[in-house]
Length: 147
Image 1 (cartoon, helix red, strand yellow):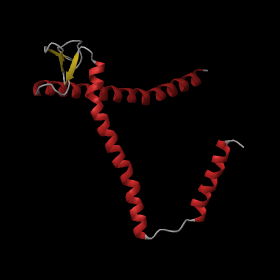
Image 2 (cartoon, helix red, strand yellow):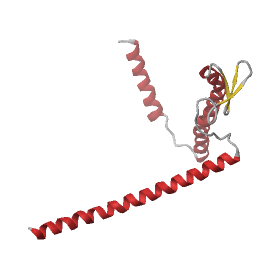
Image 3 (tube, helix red, strand yellow):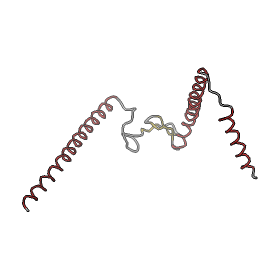
Image 4 (cartoon, rainbow, N blue to C red):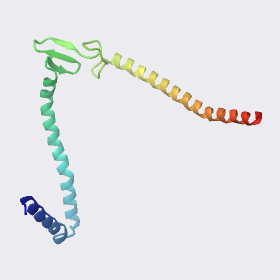
């Protein structure tokens, strides 16, 4: 018998004992404690994982951008010179959240116009779809009368 097979058998016996041999209903206070434990473990674990990821973020950005470090829409080169990245900067692009109020307002108006145009196109499409079956039915009726 291999070591792994023996380990598996012992594990199955332990699971059977835990789930069948020593299972007692918890009192209400015990249920609340276990609910608290099952709730807090993922929250605390997630918090520490998030903190770890935050600590790794600057090094990831520096590795990704070998020429300089990114701050918002600006890139600081190794020689201390700043470059604008995104709209009106290196590589084109869109205005990010760091844009001024006027640009944000202009972008908002543009988005409203686009959404209005999209809704109009959708209404026209639905109208065409409703009229299309009626046109097909009418043409089939006229063909039936002609023959």
